Image (cartoon, rainbow, N blue to C red; front, side, top):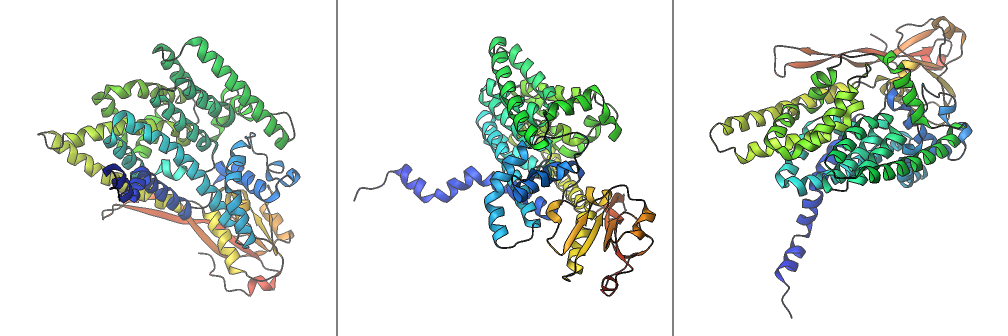
Length: 504
C-alpha cells in the first residue's frame, strides 16, 4: 500500500484543527453576539420599522393591507429590502417553529440571529483581508479588541438601517484592503442609496482618496458609480413603492428630512466634538487610544484611517448625534488599534516596551469590565418587553383579553413578535387621555403611569436608570427604578382573582 504524502496526512489528521483555524475567531465573536441577542431579545423604537416589517413578511406574506407600517408609518419611510433579505434567510427556521406551535417570540430571536450572522460574515471578510495585509497577529488582536468591546457585537443583531449598511461597509473595507477599488465604491453606493443616505459622507472621502492615489480613474469611477446608483435607485423605488403604496425612494426622503430640513435635531443635539470625546471612547474603550498609536507606528494604515476619520468629522457637523450613525467607522479604527497592539506584543521583552505592554493588558481587563457593566445596563433597558412577557405568564385563562400598550411600553421592548395568539388581543391606540381609560373596556393596561382611575396596579417592571459610583469592588452599580406598570380592570373579577405581586 502506498504511503500517504506528508501534506495529505497532516491535512487528514488535522482536519478539525484546520476548521478551527479558519472559523475559530468567527465562532468566538458569533458566540458573544448570540449571547447578547438571547439575553436582550427585545428591540427598541429605533428598530421598530424593520422588526415589524420582518414580522409582517413572515406572518402576513403578500397581504400588505395587514402590515403594521400602514397603521404606524413612522416619521420617515424606510426601505423594506433589508427586512426582505433577513426574512427570506430566516423563513425555513420560522416555518418549522410555526409547525411546532412555538411562540412567535422565538421567531424574533431567529431573525435577529440571522441578521447577526450576516453582519459577522461581512466582518469575517474584513478579518481575512486584515490577516493577508497585516499578518496573523494583527488579525488576532483585531478579533480580541472587537470581542472586549460591547457595542459592535451588541448592535450586530439589531435590525437598524445602520446595521444593514454596516454589513456593506465591512464588505467595502475588505474590497479596499484587497485592492478591488471599484467594488469598494459600489458597496458603499448600495449602502447609501438603499439603507443609509449618510454613507455618502464615507463614500466621498474614500472615493477622493482612491482618485488622489490614482487607484481608480475619474472616468471609470463615474461610470461604475452612476450605473450602480441607478440600478439601486430603480430597485428600491420598485420594491418600496409597492410596499408603501405610493411612488417612493425612502432614503431620498430621509436625506431631505435630516439634512435639508434638519428635522433630526428635534430628537436632541450634542456638541460638535461628542463623537470623539464620548461615543468613540465609550464604544472602543482601549482600542480608541491604540488606534491613534497604530497610525503613528504603522504608516500602512494611514491611507485607510484618514478617510474614515474624515467621515466622522463630517458627521460631527450634524447636531443630532448617535453612536449608531458612525458605527461603520469602528471596524477600521479597530484595525489600526490591532496594529499598535501587535507592535507592543512583538516588543514586549524590550526595556520600556514591557511596561507599555503590561498597561495594555490591564486596559484590556478594564475594557472587559466596562463592557460587562454596559451589557447589564442594556439588559435592563427593555421594561416594556419584560412587562408583556410577565403578563402573558400570569394570566393563562382562555377568556378573551384586551391589552392596551402605550407608546413608552411599545418603544421599550414590545413588538408584534411579542404578541400571543387568541385569546390575547392588543391595542396601541395613541393619545388616549389618562382619564379616558376608566370609560374603556381594556382588560389590562401597560404604561408608564403608576395609578389610573378604574384600574388596579398589578405589578411594575424596573428599568435601568443610571450608573452609580460606590467605594467598593466593583465600584460601579446599576440603579433601577419602576418604568412600566401593569394595570388590571377593576370591573373584571377574573383579573382581580389572580395572585398579583402589586406595585411598589
